[in-house]
Length: 116
Image 1 (cartoon, rainbow, N blue to C red):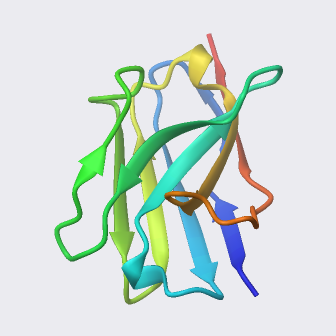
Image 2 (tube, rainbow, N blue to C red):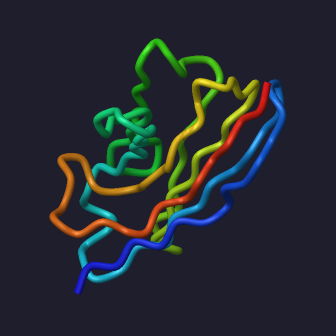
């Protein structure tokens, strides 16, 4: 049974930082590319960071977060992280982790709210 448990969200002022964590279980984590997705109210879910398998892990980001967000993974702990710096109000959303491409199961997500 796939389980994805996100944590670390919260309320932060613009320019602040947050670090999200996601504990995964129920699938072969080490062989899956992983990603962080977000969904703002009234908008579609979008992929904001991804990392391939392997120790190094190639990362990829859309222009909207490039240079501010950093994804990393710990295969031994089956955990993926998202360090978010210089947060902006437009980063406000519920953040989810999942494989890339995504599995059918999703976690509850972590609410990130950035005030101006």
